[in-house]
Image (cartoon, rainbow, N blue to C red; front, side):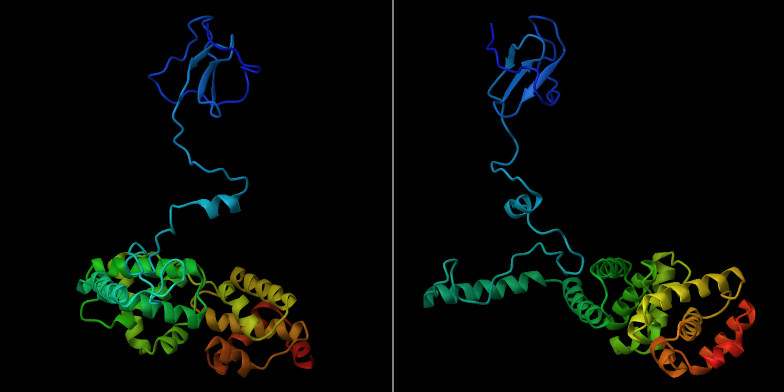
Length: 324
């Protein structure tokens, strides 16, 4: 007869191994409980121990919180597309010290120097690796200056890797292709940046950047969502130091303009700038047309024309705005 336990019907998990019996030979019960602490399988009806000495394939340590579990995990960092080797290679530190912080002996130091040199050579041993190393460095610089989030950087790096596989980079500037992939990633994630801003930051001609961007769309068959003027509001308002009520009123004006068909065939940057101008006047936080045009990277004439259209179509009293 098997060994009895105090609470045989305690919590457990159903049997995972189909080779082990799932029916008790004594009482015929199919209620089998696994005790992970003792490594036993016990019948839930009569308490008979069906098997013992089970192997625990889990971690050998215990954790009582998610932070503690992450600290003890040894699986390493996740793969990153923004690193040319996806973060899989070993990095040898430039400091000539061991794990205890002690300085290395001259013999050991020369050996580490040779290992470091060969390690660097092995990371960029092919032309594609050298191209990726230079491109990812440029992507990091460009994203840092533009304040691009990590998720958009990863998408831009993935698009660039696809363009290399399609041999789109051959014969073209690496800086232009990186800027084009970053611009496309921002558009896909509904966090667009003006083309002029990306071109100025990347030191690439706007015309060349546009050509590379259209090449990406055509070759990789990327589906870019239609640009929405609302996507620019939060960033423009932040640069103009406008309050949240002004942003909300600007979004309302743009939604009304869209319902009236005013956004069809018009530049979203100009519409966003004009809506901000109208909302800033209505909420008594007025900004000049020149200030808004410089932030939105459009001309004052564009802001003035879109402003007149919004006031006319939405029936806003222009005399009241002028008085304010």
